[in-house]
Length: 323
Image 1 (cartoon, rainbow, N blue to C red):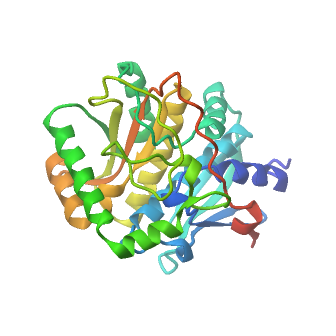
Image 2 (cartoon, one colour):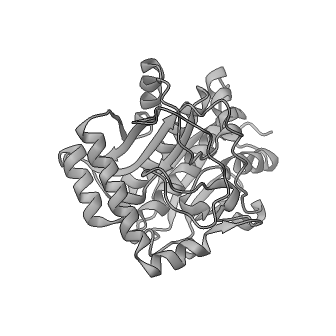
């Protein structure tokens, strides 16, 4: 390993960990280009979902998540990342240029990197067991350190309005044949390196769960489900591409911090994919003080629940190439 740049095996190992990042419908809409001393992240617009994600917000959130995963992985291998976000205004697909300096990984960094391999998107209902306030505070701190805002949606009227937004979005998507066609292309698969596999989705009995095709994941038997699990809203002061990219990084930090505490997690975007419903969420939940980007549901999985299987990823050679 050179003193100024990680060797190719280290970069590849960090990229392999980064590939575990969540993305909208597991589209993995990113491309990496590796140079002698830099690594570059690009959005892959060929994997954009126009019916689900008409304004590319979910795509940028996904790329922000993979960028944060890469930064965490690189730090755990002894390399601090210096990130130049959106370095070329004339090339909007170029999302980040990354340079490196040597560092000594801390125990916290190594723990966060280990959470990458343990994190799953768990679409099942969570138990009503209380999440310690200290956990919530630490998770929020992890997200806000990444350039976005995170706050908890407590019970009561605000949560009720948010649940209603989910229900309305689900109703509209259910009645939209074009959306359903796109969804069928990206869910319900049994053997694939992309999309939401049947074994990772569950029948949508919960209003917060998106209805994917051919779900086979089994729910645990739970009682006392009212307001089960916590909801964290990731939002930003602006709504430009940089803000959305940073919101994706914040989401990754929230997911990994929650995983580190042993919590189950599920990123949620469905009500924010319809402009008028997103505007209502902005008004009802944020009082027009910011732009909602994503909701993360966190909670304790039932002890009787089977482990959620890994969602497959594309081969690294499909998403990485040399400059």
